[in-house]
Each structure stands twice: as structure tokens, then as C-alpha cells.
Length: 316
Image (cartoon, rainbow, N blue to C red; front, side, top):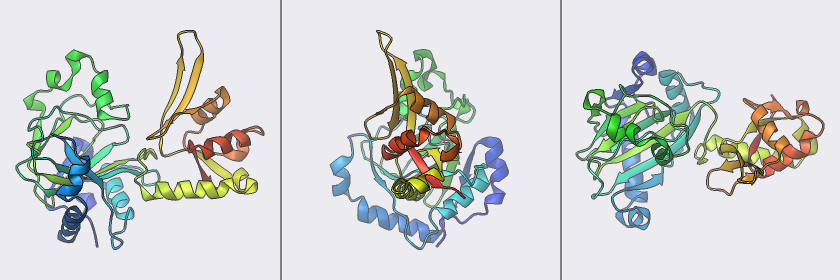
């Protein structure tokens, strides 16, 4: 079973020039039914009531059925349409969002978290809603781990409600089976009159970043890291990469000039770092062999891997 029904090559030029796409009936009818079945089974009103906030939306991680080439098909299509690097692409979110009946009809525009280079929405139930994007406005990237943090960082005269204008907006009335994709962390957007609508949102980047751990290859990498840690010989032959769930490296000075260095992973307590560990993490970039990091690096690599701050990849 395929997720998408369109030819990626037919939409690449438009996306790369405009930064967004609306593809009518871009999802196969079979997969639309899969999504609807999942919503009926996993996001019943009773389950939504357990965690949905008033005026917000119920949210659940979508599980792809075994007959779908997951995540291979998603990688192939998004890398072709959006020009993402196929070797380093990551799926950073796969959430079903079901908007409550009391959802705010005209919410404030936002930009998605930094891991959402490309945001993709698959419409399941539209109700009376529409996606509104602002491709003509500033495309400054959200560098933070949440939309709220970016919003709060802006001066009052640069908030979206102050600077965005109607001539910059594009309203998309997506129907069940439609695909909408755009640069999620760069383009302001919202869903207007969202009450009753249901969508599957998929978020991608090509800088190897999956803070929530929702890409199945992230889980595989973590399992392989634990295996390599059991054998010092294999550890010495491994390639070290920053963990896909590493959100931030912070280096700050307290009031009395004490230095604090930390690694932050989503949903976990920060990991304290010494100066050498901090420098090691900054030096990794796309990955480095353990053997070239220096004779005293193995112990630091082991400690950082045990805390989930780095991933170990078998060489070759």
C-alpha cells in the first residue's frame, strides 16, 4: 500500500520556488481509510478527554501499518519534492491532531519547532477549517525547540499579530485526501476554524534531528549504540554522531562567573558536561571515528553514549 498518489517530480519545481504545495487527492484512497480507521480506534472521544486541553487539540502518535513502506516511501517522496538530503533525512513528528469543538476559530500564527524543516499535513476530516500560511512574510527560521519559545522571544512589535498582513496570506481549503506541505519552521501558519477537523501531521528535516524519537530508525540507532557499548573493540571502530534527540548544548555563566555546560535531550533532565566533553560534541558535525578523537576520548564517548547524548554507528 502506498501513502502518496502523486509523482514527486511533478511538484518539485513548485515547492522549491514557492516553499509550499497543496496537492489535491495526493493521498491514496486506501491510506485515507487507514487513517480514518486509526482515528476511530485510537482517538475516541473517551481517550481524547483524558489528555486534550480545553480549546486545544487531541493528539496521538500515528502508527503506520506493516503493508506501508515506512519510513522509506516518506523519505523518498519528501527528498525528491523538497530537495532534502536522502542520506540524513529524519521524520521528527507523526501526529494525528483532532481539534476540539471549542478550539479558537482564529488562533495566532506560529512557526513549528526547529526540527520541522518541512511540515506535511494529510487531511482526514476538514470540517469547516482551512490552513492559512504566510509565504510572503519573513522566513526567519525558528531556532528553538518549540513554537511558543520562538513567539516569546520576539519583541512586541515583531509578534505575528502585529506584522502579518492579509496580502501575505494564502488560505488553503484542504479536503480529505489532500496534501499540504511547506517550510514549517520558517513560514508562519495556522489552522482557521479548526473545530472538528482531523489531520495527520508529518514533520521532516535533513539534519539528522528527531527530538521526540518518533522516527523508527532513531530507535534502531539507539539499540545499536547499546550493542556497541558492550564491546570495547567494537566501540573503538565506531563512528560517533550527535544523538538524534540532542536538542541543545548550553554554556552559561552564573552571577558569580561559574561556568555551566549542559546537553539537553527532549523529556529528560539535562546532562552536565565538562569542557572537554562540550568541545567533543561541538567537533562532531556529521560524525567522526572514535579512533581519531584522541587516546583519552574513549571514556568520554562511553559516558556520553550511556547518557544518550551521542549515537554510535558501525563504521562502513
